[in-house]
Length: 95
Length: 454
Image (cartoon, rainbow over the protein chains, first blue to last red):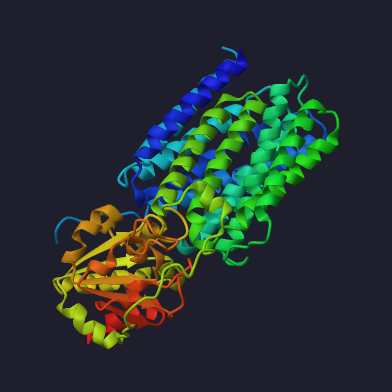
């Protein structure tokens, strides 16, 4: 049942993703990409359980490294996207 | 309410925040807020995960988070806007390796069904390809590796065999999870596959491969989500996967090539097909160009990767302001694959404070091209190559281009007569209305600006 339910989520999210992204104008493609990239750092959530669990040394080491890498992805990704977006300005109304 | 329920409810909220975040990214006016909303979703997902009862020790998490935050924040602050493509590639790779490791850790779970084993294998495969592929892309973009395609005889055969070996290894991994050999082999093979996939890709095809790797990093997170039975990973991962696929598609269309063609054939293998180009190249000094620009009523600027290399975006903006003061209309025409990643030119011009509503896409500018007095091509080549329109034998024939040659006069700012990435001669340079201004784009533009102030 879990499998069916997770696949259901998967399919719906993919369709939703297509719908959402299709509307993004070309001018925002770089921030979109780095913003989406930051979202893919969600794997951090999975890494936390590995790093904090009661597994073997190997799983804790792998988990901790995964946490570090995913955090770079998340923190760096969001900050850099914000920095880019802060630069986008509309032309001020007629001078 | 149990903790599990609280966590899952919060994940739902986080998913909604991601969705709204992406939605708001659809317009420049709301994009910054969208990014903040998405970051809030991430924070929520991470914080509630810490409540999970499976987590008993927070020291290692703290260590990992501290290191990651320090490195990430530092890199994000310091990176130059021109270096953005390689930064994104690198972050992307880190997401990939994290998913690979999450998959590996998931192997320690009790009671692994074949399906879970398959998804673990997939997160290792996709994560590994994303990691090494992104590292190679990073190397190429930052010019630590040669940017040209690296090709060798029998490359397709080798890559095909590698892919088969990966699948075979996957099958053994699922059937015999107790033998660690298959796990290590899966990690090694996927890493090699990532390198082999990206080395034949040349510089100008980078926008496609960056988009594709972006999609992979989402899919890797998605596979890891199945492996540890976590729905937020699946939702967020597939949103990113879909977004990357769409960008890949847009980039491929803008080059009139299929994804398979980009991945499997190093570009430029088909040359000498274009035939002879008639006419002569006419060079022009910056001083003479000034007289033309001074009289111009409308100017369209067409930037390419060369503008990024020369860091010329700020001086372009200066020239724009001077021309506007002179009563001239200035518009920018942006080709979808100009630069090294989707939207690369837009970010650079935004950095130089050029308002985004002056930046027009190819389809909006082409019908108006005849009306422009001057088109200034800055470090762009293939995206304005009329051979794409006129020479059926040309490898880029059929690729949509910006019709710079239709403007009354075309200035081409270029270092030398060396051909573009595609290794093709550009008939535009030989047109009667084309004038070459040789030299560093930044210097040339600076000279033009000085001529105006004299």
